Length: 55
Image (tube, rainbow, N blue to C red; front, side):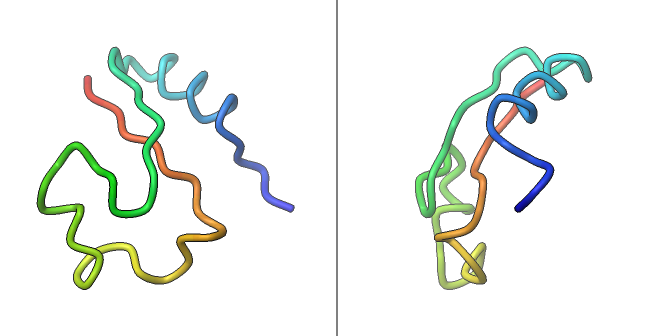
């Protein structure tokens, strides 16, 4: 069990001033460099929460 979930993360990001918040997925980032799974985020994609935010 984890303290984080999608709803809670979105709420806290909005409270922190982020205006654009997106659900994402393994290898599906808006940023091309973060889509390279050989270099980024290869440790636990099945148990990870993927969210991107822009202030």
